Each structure stands twice: as structure tokens, then as C-alpha cells.
Amino acid sequence: MKVTFAAIATYFFRGLLITVPLAGTIYIVISFFEWMDSLLPFRTLGVGIIVILISITFIGYLTSLFVARSLFEWFERLLLRLPMVGLIYTSIKDLMAAFVGEEKKFSKSVLVKINAENDIYRLGFITAEDLSLLKINDLIGVYFPHSYNISGNLYLVAAKNITPIDYDNSADLMKFIASGGVSELLPNTKKNKDFGEDLL
Image 1: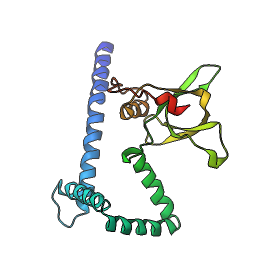
Image 2: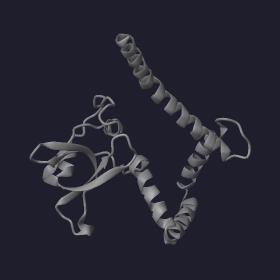
Image 3: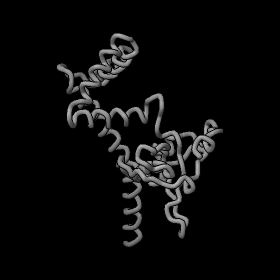
Image 4: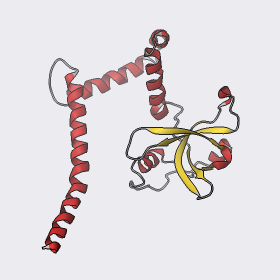
């Protein structure tokens, strides 16, 4: 009876490993589509996200035009003057720029020594190399994503405790950290030759 119960338990946990991630992904995707569709006056599954993607692309095109860009910059300055609204706007804008902007922030992955006695390290991304405005000249800002979470911590660490990582796939490294090291790292597709020289 014990053998049978152990086998059933094994099958159950194997099933969990397959169904929970799959069901969670399907639920999130469907919920996202339904939320997008709810923004439109008519209800057709999938149309909402298509319309919104086209609208976002069109807005991006408009900002490339001089007149539209000037108007957008004026509206942006207006938002920045509003209490709280400006803080929220700039926070979201900077976060988006870190992932999809021309100057991506999560492109320099490093290994940081956290505990010298026990040789404990953490993987992270350099997000701020110049902290002179904070009167800090010998530290670097490193962002550490939390495992199994979308949040993270920012540490100010000595440059001597940072080891550049010769790994160019930031998305895979982010997944590796966020999954607690469970996600598989893929081989490099290119080399960052001057990474160490730019850092230190």
C-alpha cells in the first residue's frame, strides 16, 4: 500500500509540474486579452490587443514627427509638474526605457561578492555607474531581481566587489535569476569585448 501511495504521490507532483505552469500561463494570457477587449465598446476576443498594439505603434510614429514630438514634450512637461502624477509617470517611463529604450539599463550583468568570509555572491545588473550627485564616488548601483518575483533590490557596492560576466543574453539571465536559478541559461550569441573596460 505504501508503494502504491508513493507512486500516486509521484504522479501527482509530476502532474503539478506540468499543469500549474501551463494553466497559469493560459490564465494570464486570456485575462490579458479579456482586459484589452474590455477597453473597446465592442467585444471580439483578440481584437482589443490588436487595436491597442496598432495604436501604440501609431503613437510611436507620431513622436518621430517634429510637430507631434513638440506637442508630446509639452504634454510631458505638464505631467511632470503635477504632484504624484509626475512621480508615477517618470517611474513607469524610466522602467520601460530600461527594457525597450535606446539606452537599455539591464545590459550589464555582474557577479557581486556579498559575503567575503563565506564567498557568497549574487547575480545582478548595473543600473547606475555615476553616483556623484549623491556624493558617492566609489560605489556602483546594482539591481538584484528577486527570485520568483517581479520586484528586486538596488545595492550600492564597491567596484572591487563586482565581477563582469561575459554573457550577453540579459533576458535569459533575468529569467535565470527570477526563477531562482531553475531556468536554463542559453549559450552566448555574441561577445561584449569592451564590457570590463567600460565598467571599471
